[in-house]
Image (cartoon, rainbow, N blue to C red; front, side, top):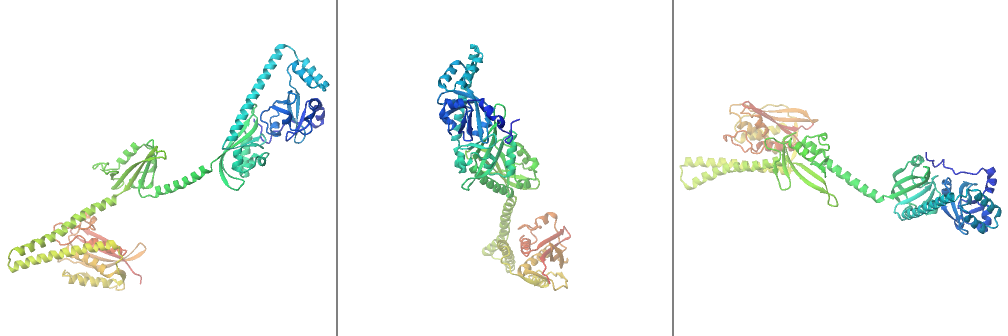
Length: 639
């Protein structure tokens, strides 16, 4: 198990035996936390009297191992490893271990690093004043086995160690150079979690200088809350890494986003020796994602709220999204469309079409007209577009569906209207033209002339009524009631006026009416309501036999949280079928196609428009051969 940040402690010398132990190492070297030499053994002092006072270790020695020495804490973290120091003045190599000495100090416990008598002779020549120590070292060498083979093995091992150290030192320098040149911020901490080194990119982005950061705890640099720092600490203590996107604050107060990775570095024994933190600046990426997120939200809302259907497929032809409007117009459900291929989608869609007419429908230049019979009769205009990214690479297809059922029906009605209008206008015009031409070219008896002129008058009257009805209908539809003069009127006044005009118009038919509640009032355009009621009474007269009764009554009912009154006209005429009733309010539609009953086919269209503008509606019920009831419902005024 790797040692944690808090558990890692360097070896230390027992205080009671410190002096005796140091006397056993005449080449010992004591340094403080800045690696300044505080004291040294007698042999080192005699070898180099200028070691003291207070010179930095780097001025007197080359530290061959460990290679990456940042400060005292780094040395303490790797105290289990062999230390190799080369004395610059003499070239003498010394090796040993490192131990804690006093507060914020450490001691190198060193021996001369010699492998043969030649090295020892050099030591004797350069250190003549250190006879007791040299003799002790010489005795140690003399007591070693002098077999030539063993010295050769040791020499080979030494060369291998030096080669390995040189290679690692070169790698370290290369990596340090690479990290220094990186655009990413890099922070290196020791095994206890305290910062030992930062690169230029970190200093430029954060605005901190190296001396402001080195020696601080790594968690203090994250601008994170205590819970996050504690989480990071636990992960790192267990030898696990940490990755997160964090919002940081630079020294000048500006905020920026980083993608942070912290990883523990392990030594050859599996113990944590360092931590490395790499922070990639993702501020621009975050800003782009925010803009993209807003656009995506807008597009998604548009996609979902659009009354038109949208279906998208990716570059592999797999369905990726479908909006509610498409599901509503086709009656399909989301589960039927999950991850289906485009060919399966086409089969599913074709199953909704009419088997008789086929699904393909009518092809336009850039679209196809589809006729669906399920869930209801629907006409859909379908368009397909390919989608490409900024590099013009194909990313999928977008299928657009627009419900044009109403447009198609209006187009059909427009065609029928023009055809029927032309027919209705042509019929009286033909009669007028024919009889006037006869009167101009031939001589007729007075009785015959009178007969012909009566026909011309009758047809011109019909033509005038037809044109007037068309103009009234067009005016009402165009202005949507804006030209109506709506005021409160008593309902009985409206009925009395309509009945009088009906009699004066020459219809000559008595209408039964008996109602005593003269207080009922409605808000209406008096003339328009009279016109509507007159049309209903005229139809009742034309489509019922002369001897049958026509009755007018006033009804009341509550509906839609309002009170309504109805003008109900009942006749006992020819009646209508259900098919007739379904087309009753179409322009120029007439239930009687014999031509024996005069009319334009526009009367009930006018009635419907007038009543609906008043906020009411028209009820029609009929039985073929029994008669018809038409009721005009209007809002009742409160007393």
